[in-house]
View 1 (cartoon, one colour):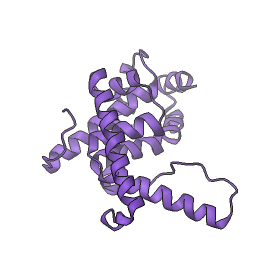
View 2 (cartoon, rainbow, N blue to C red):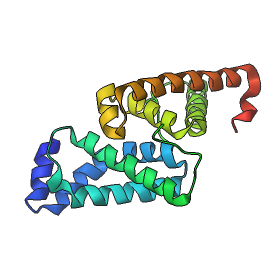
View 3 (cartoon, rainbow, N blue to C red):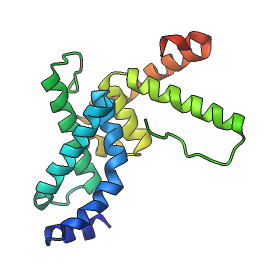
View 4 (cartoon, helix red, strand yellow):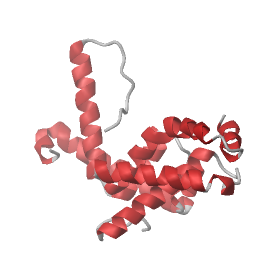
Amino acid sequence: MDDLYIKKVIDGDTEAFRYFVSQYKDMAFTLSMSVVKNEFLATDVVQEAFMKAFQNLKKFKGNSKFSTWFYRIVVNESIKVIRKKGEQNVDLNSSHNLHPVSDTSVIDQLKEDEREFYINEILNRLPATESLVLRLFYLNENNIAEICEITGWSESKVKVTLHRARKNMEKLFTKYLKGEAKTLI
């Protein structure tokens, strides 16, 4: 489907680009949030990434999926924003639904909402690299090769970062379960 819309946009139907915006805006925002950790900055990053994708669509060779190419733009723009802010604690080179809502009781829904809240809180507290790789792997369901392409990292770096992220997320969840959740908020 992406190929059809790419052709339409390249052939001059600029309205066809709306397809990409509606298809990829949520995950783009999620990925940017994992890096910049600020809603307003993430919104700006996503807008800039869409503009760059639109302007450079003719350069898209189709060697990868459009989403992979576009998410790479989002990650690069997010890194650029962080560097402009001068936040040295983010070293990328070394609020969305995580579960679908189902017909459950109010108590079950409250538990689901609480779980979602803490997952998002933990993802926001993890280092940008770890949060990014978890979101790509679990939320966007990218495989290791696609994550490598999106981030520009080696396969071993992606695997190590994913492993470390899982461990750190588990530690933060353990704190939550032991009643130390106040440290998360």
